Image (tube, rainbow, N blue to C red; front, top):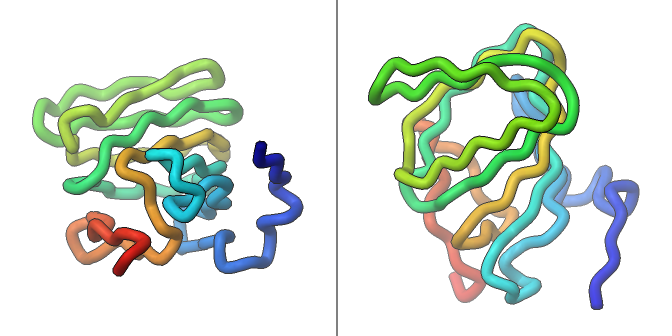
Length: 130
């Protein structure tokens, strides 16, 4: 059994920040369970472009308000507490934040914690063996 708190992650290598978000990576590939879990904060007034070409991501909103735009279709969906979106087709998307959003993200395959978004908003596929 693994029990881990966000407080244990703060200030470690598993606490990753950018100009528009902060990701506390709670469960990573090294745990060997086939997925990773993160608590992510998206900062108020920001817009972020993402494309997980190598991962499937589910995102459950716990706090805040904003919207997600599917860049393939132009569809815009509102984000609020209790909303989940699943990027099950490696969807290119933008997230616009009206009120700071906190969410729980699950990635498959799991991330190692060493990934950084490239110029296309993509995480490279890194394995624990790499």
